[in-house]
Length: 114
Image (tube, rainbow, N blue to C red; front, top):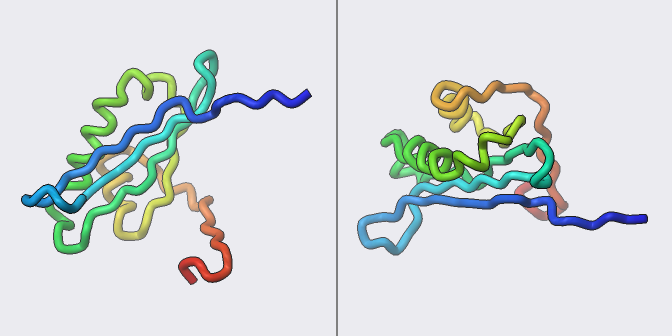
């Protein structure tokens, strides 16, 4: 018998807006997966800062706020992952303790981001 259940247990995102509060200039989202009675794993996504706002600590601020406000949920996360760009990898490794495992592979549909 099939057992279909909700797998996303928590999803949260934060962003910093420009001075006019019209555009998001830096953002990140965290999703955790797993049931309430099991260990969870997390995934960081949409970590991005517009080019002209980079190297100002904005992504670090957003990630710290995201982790701080997800603290209760993160206590049960045993594994967390993300697809880190070459540009972003040093931030994840130096500031947040991520380790490059060299195992991610991006697969796209024909016509998408080729």
